[in-house]
Length: 312
Ligand code: COA
Ligand code: ZN
Image 1 (cartoon, rainbow, N blue to C red):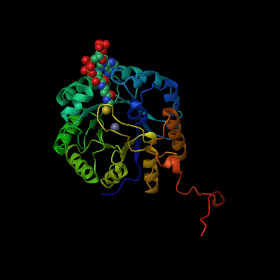
Image 2: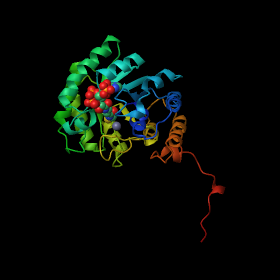
Image 3: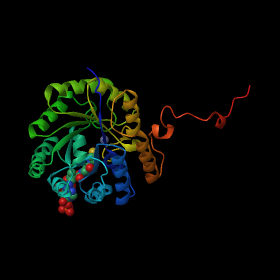
Image 4: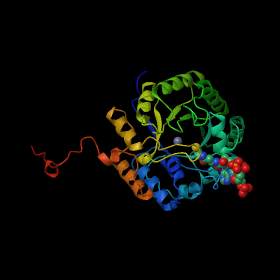
C-alpha cells in the first residue's frame, strides 16, 4: 500500500505527558505551551482531560486552559472524557471533540477507570448523547491495543470488536493506543489490516509509546499500511499512571523530522516545535527523551573552528 502524502500529527503531550507530572503546572504555563504548539502549525491537540480531579489532579484545570488559549491558527482541540460527567463538563467548556477511552483488556480497564470493558462501552452511549446534543464529535481510543501489562498478548479480534462498537455508536474515529510500548511493526500491520476489514469507514489513528525504543519503526509500519494519523508528545514526555512501566510517548519533533525527511507533509514548522519542546524541558525541570530538539535539523552544520582536531 502507498504511503500517505500528508499526515495529521495529533499532539497529546499536554494530556498524556503532563498528566504524570507530580507538581502542579500552572494553568498559564499550560496555555503558553499549547499556544506555542498552535503557532508551530499543529492542527490537532489532545489538550487535557475531564476526568476525576482526584484521579488526575494535574488536569483539573481543563476548562480554564481552554478558555485562556489565544488560538493564533486553526486547530482542533480534543479532550479525553471517561464518563457522562466528563462529557457534560467538556461540552460546557466548548471543546472541539470528545475522546472516550477503554482498554482492550479487562484488567487494565479496571485499573484505569474502575469498571469492566462492557460497562465502559455501555457508558459511552450517554457520552455520545450529550455530545450530539451540542453537535460535538466523539472519537474513541483503545488502550493496550498491542498488549496489556497485566494480561500479555491481546487477540486482534478483541480490538476489532471494540472498534466495531465505536463505529456502531457513531464515533468519528478509532485510535489504537500502545499504552506500555508493546507494539511491534508486525503487530501494527496485523491490527491495521484487521481494522480495515472490520471498520472500513472509520479513520484509524496510531498512538505509540517509545518504551522499547521502536516507536518510530512502528510508525514506518503504519505508513506502509497507508495510515495517515499519528499521536505523539512534545519532547517525548509521557506515561500512564495506571500502567507499570509506561514511559514516554513517541516524540513529536522526532516524528515530524522523520515524516518531512520521507517527503510527507505535516504543515508543522519543526524549528518552532523544537522551541516548544525545549520549553517543556524547562517546565518539568529534567532532560526529556526528544532527540531532534537537541541535535537540530539534519543540515545544521558545525563550525570547524569550534571542534578540536585530533592529534597524531
Ligand atoms: N469529572 C469530575 N469528577 C468526576 C468525574 C469527571 N469526569 N467522574 C467522576 N467524578 C467524581 C464523582 O462526582 C465522584 O465525586 P464525589 O465522590 O465527590 O461524589 C467521584 O469522582 C467518584 O465517582 P465515580 O463515578 O464513583 O467514579 P470512580 O471513583 O469509579 O472513578 C473515573 C472512575 C473514570 C471517574 C476515574 O477513575 C477517572 O477519572 N479515571 C481517569 C483515568 C485517566 O485519566 N487515565 C488516563 C488515560 S489512559
Ligand atoms: Zn498514551
